[in-house]
Amino acid sequence: MRSIVLRAVAASGLFVACAAFAGAGSAVQAATAASAAPLGQITPGDWPTYHLDNQRDGNNTKLSPLSTLSLNWTATLDGPVYGQPLLVGGRVFAATENDTVYALNRTTGAVIWSAHVGSPEPLSSLPCGDIDPLGITSTMVYDPGTNRVYALAEMLGATHTLFGINAATGTVELQTPLDPPKGTANAFQQRGALTLLNGRIYVPYGGLYGDCGNYIGQVVSVATDGTGETSYAVPTAREGGIWETGGGVVEPNGNLLYASGNGAATSGTYDGADSVMELSPSLQRLDFFAPTDWATQNGGDADLGSQTPAIVGQYIYEDGKTNNGYVLKLGALGGVGGQVAELANTCQTFGTAAVAGNIVYAPCASGPQAVSIGADGTPTVLWKSTVPAEGSPVIGGGAVWWVDYFGGELYALDPATGATKAQIYLGSACPTFTSPTVVGNQAFVGTKTGVVAVGGA
Image (cartoon, rainbow, N blue to C red; front, side, top):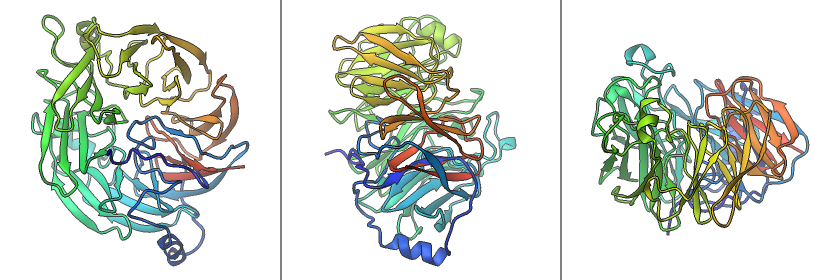
């Protein structure tokens, strides 16, 4: 049975937005209130992994309908929060680029505990990049079996370390080095969400902004006790980064899907990059898809690696930087040119889509877009919104939720038409590719200063 493939069924509300701290009540009161919440299990109303579950559909079907929005609280932390906040047992878990993991009281935003695991890498010590300093960038994952949140931190010396932190106390219970085995450590950035599957943590690696240095896209995995390391490297001479925000997507058969970026080859034999890959839990490549113009895409940095693969029934929908969407057959990706259908949708996607039924809500740089996938795999654009929201959407409460991370605005759009149902300014801009966490009648969003909570009525 798959771990963290449980649906988070919302009982009361939760959404994440952008701003700075003004939590009510004392830290003692906050800790006492939170201590009554169950930990060590997944319960209705929890959000334990990126986009809710291991399929990464971001679809919370039990979310309360929302009409008006208001800021509940803002928590100023010690750095930007790039990863999607988690919600377990009434606690909001967030990690910063200063290599600190926080547990916050869901009601007030007060800090219950914090664990500073190391010193992040300054941008001045890296060959390129756009995050300063570089610490914890990806979305963490909660494991009910160990009652830990797991985070991958970059620290001084460009070392990458996996931490397992007790969700109840903040005690660091696991610390294991997890540098990718190929390439030069300071050329990597760990952006994709961690995946928990069958007692193992899967960590994808890509490159820094600017694609500098000696790196190759890789997935590294260890058991939740830090043992039994395995890895997979994209079979290209260089690049092929695995940096899409959703990390590993688990198929119904228990295998993992990842998308990789452009590789080194611009002619000749296909080099294994610019692809959607199916990996076994032991990290053997079982199947792949690549566009027929992979060489041109490699040469122009116009690849599939910017979007997490989206499972839509018997199909997979994959977009990327080329203004084309590809429909693939789940379980038979087809190799080079093996798509079921293709859609010229003028959408460059950066992040992770949300899925409801046969509808894909795509994170286009040009604004929100909805695509339907027919029974025969034919894709059709349902609507395009002019709202300036580029973040990765989630679904719930009769709306699709999108963040304009440049402007710091949270939008609730009509799933059928794309019309704006509600919106609210979050108080500050958000990091790139931000995705809200939505439960009950609240939303939580990581910002450049911490976490914001939005309530709905």
